[in-house]
Length: 187
Image (cartoon, rainbow, N blue to C red):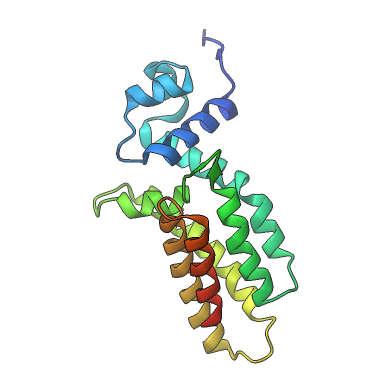
């Protein structure tokens, strides 16, 4: 007879997501996950398979957390203004008290090795491509861009977003504001 789980998966995954976001994928050990999630290795393996399984579930959790600002961008009819607002919204979203954590996806992408689990790489890519599509859709609202320019500018913005996510962990509000303003001067 199977034992009943003594925890709620969504809650322990949220704790794991926070740990990965704060410490990074590579640095996070199973021992750290046990402590943060409040469950033992056996339960982690039984529910999620391994560290990679926990991380894949953490990406889903992150997608839900960031949904408020991505949905705002998805329904925006403000073109470039909406995109710029998304960058500022992201800065607020990434705050944890006075500390900025950057983006879970960017943080993980920056540290993964070439030999990383292909499923993780695929999920990171899928997430990034989804955000890039939102950027392209908002750029299409601008009458002065042809389809080639939309695609080029969407690429520029997603790479700029990666830069912002990384920079947000180190630089102050004024520097981040200047960075965002300069990104959009070149659009």
